[in-house]
Length: 104
Image 1 (spheres, rainbow, N blue to C red):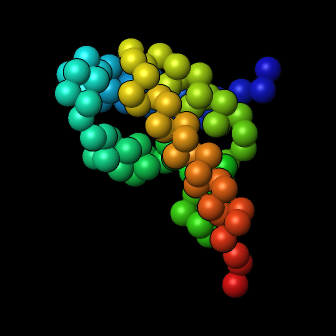
Image 2: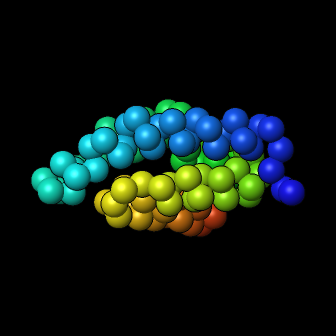
């Protein structure tokens, strides 16, 4: 298959994060429509955002299979309030880097 042991270790870290940091609070967050800025900061700090982007731009410089692992695992979030915005943030980051990012 396309995943090796490093992909599976990455999967385990995302799964642990989803199970411990997101799913226990999902009902409360969706009921209150709580802003999730702190959650996205944690996700970024753990390397769950910017997976494919060059390290020069703050990304991890990893392959598409890592992003596939992330998308599979955020599919296990018990609600839409986190998984959809995290996907949109990655898309906007990608577009921003494409349009404005430059190497010097």
